[in-house]
Each structure stands twice: as structure tokens, then as C-alpha cells.
Image (cartoon, rainbow, N blue to C red; front, side):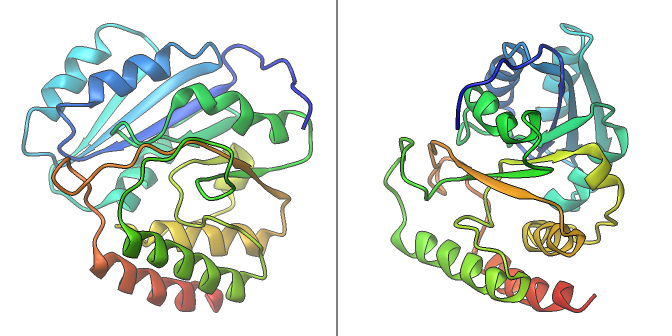
Length: 236
């Protein structure tokens, strides 16, 4: 796809956060360095470390930052629901609070929307052109299996349903009512976007995965829930 000029301040970024005191300031700095970022909505999902204080300090440094908190941990999906309710920009991207995904790749994720071809863009870790940290075999197998199963029920041909990097025109998000509190958000949003019959694109992204010792949170129970969500939202 040919390069396009990315307009400044066109993008709203939503970051769900849970116990990311060590990395949050680094991610926020990278996000705010991107000229296309108009606003950054951060939602603390009941962290019990110094995350909320870090967020308060960061909010004082840039007027684009707005912060919200849950008193009790509910999950990534719940934090994203809160974030989507407060974001104002015409294009919205999800950004994790760790260092697994690189905000410098926002331009390639925005391009299909800005040239009028897509309403939703998924950033795929498995298309092959970006750098990838080599980590867990069974985790990769699980991702591929869940994507395949999701595709079977949505009739999409995605390569990475579970990716963090999902970009939406805000009008798309406004048509969707989200229910899942945890990582079931990923198959839920995919199924509901598919039902809207809007144009969806994928672009390749880099991926710098974390180990569980470094703070990775998703586990096998979330995989089981994802299977249930794929089935549930196919028919609801």
C-alpha cells in the first residue's frame, strides 16, 4: 500500500492499565511523541501498585492525557469500555500499557482508514514482515487456533484476532455494545465488527512479547473463555 501523509492530531489512543507502574511512563512517552495523537485516554483497572499515582503525574505533563480509574479490578474489556466512552477522536486505537507493541507503527495502521478503504484495521503479528521476539510455542499455537475458530464463525480471514492493535472509526465503536470484562473482549469485538459488514484490513506489525516473569497476564483460562465468546457472539 502506497505511503500517505498522516495528518497531525487525528487519533485517539485508549490504554487499559493494570499494575504497569514500571512501563507505563515509557509507553506514554512513545505515544505522545507521535504527531498524529490528538488524545490519550488511560484507564486504571484497579491496580494495586503505583500505577494510579504514575497516571496522575503523567496527566500533569500533557493536556492530551485524560485519566480514569476503576476502584475494583474488572479486566481489560471493562477498562476499554470506560475508555471508549470518553474518547472523542474520529479514529481510535487500542494500545497496551507494556512494551509489546510499538506506537511508531501507528502510520501504517492508520493508512487503510485514511485512504478510505477500511473502517477497522487489525495489526497482525503473524503476517511476517515485522520483528518478533521468540517466545512461547504453545501460546502461539493457541493464538492461531483461536483466530482460526473465530474466522470459522465470522467468515473473516484474519491472521491475528487476538492482537492488541485494533483501530476503528469511532462511528463503528458507537454501533457496538460491549459486554466482556476480560480478554474475551477480543473475540467479542471481532464478532460484532464482522456483523456490521464494514471493510476490515490487516497490516503487519512488530511484536516484542513479554514473559510471564516480566508481567504477561493472559493465561489458559482466558483461552477457554475466548472459545466460549466465539460461540456466544456468533449467535448474539
